[in-house]
Image 1 (cartoon, rainbow, N blue to C red):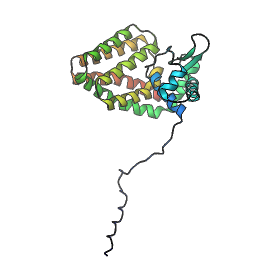
Image 2: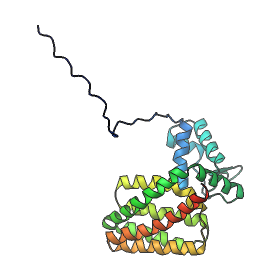
Image 3: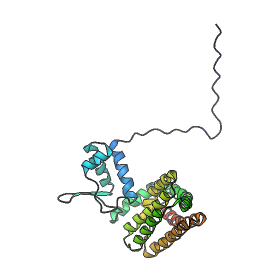
Length: 255
């Protein structure tokens, strides 16, 4: 009986830069997972300030977790200043939204200083991704998409509150990427928006700033309405470039 052929010697590791890269798996605890899901919705303005979260019994059914897990998640969000619990009749857990007090602003600035490198990367990514999303939206949009974008712009024209204006701004950008019909673009735009939201909230939302933002949004919408992908890309690039310069200046002051 012949001996089996010897197995080949394993090859030496590649000396180049394209080696496998692995990261340690961190298993989040259940309450952190629940908190992150709610935090995402609040930060993106999908649950607006002043709105009450679903009752605990509904949340534990939605997430499939225990009451203790839901309570710990809500306590975590409350410690971050995102929600507040109110007792008595008509009580519950309510979304606070952007911080208004001096202490809240300081906590926000502390987070921006801590995350400044991540925010800078997100800003650079946004400059590439959002113009691409707008260009795809110009080719894929439906009449329902256009109606939603027009409604958001109309509502934003009548808003003077900074917090509400920022929420409508977020919804406008997310509606555009939804209109692109590209799930990967949507995921990236959402993640980038989450990363830069703190910085956007700190920028001075003056009537002049809001007016400029609305005009830029209108230019993007006109291009998408006309199915002009190049114009949509250009208009969005100008808009996110304007915000990027403001955020970069803010980060410079916190270095």
